[in-house]
Image (tube, rainbow, N blue to C red; front, side, top):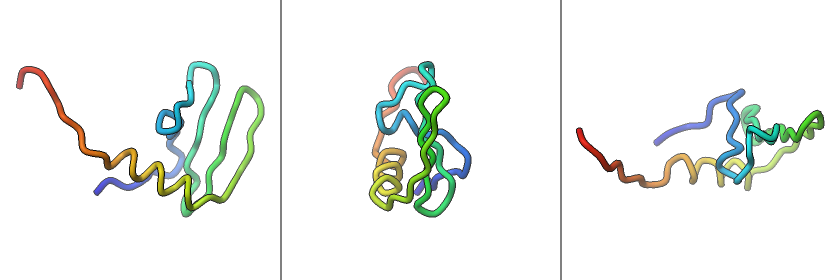
Length: 66
């Protein structure tokens, strides 16, 4: 089972576009910092942590030549 890394941007899990400055950075525990352009907001959300964990641990299929 994969775990979340402190300081990593998990915006893609929530459909955010890093090229537009949209980020969701994991701060540890259930703490997150959302960034959009020059603005940021810190939240504590168990639901967000659970959603990110489910996303990074979802089953995946790799196709192509080995």
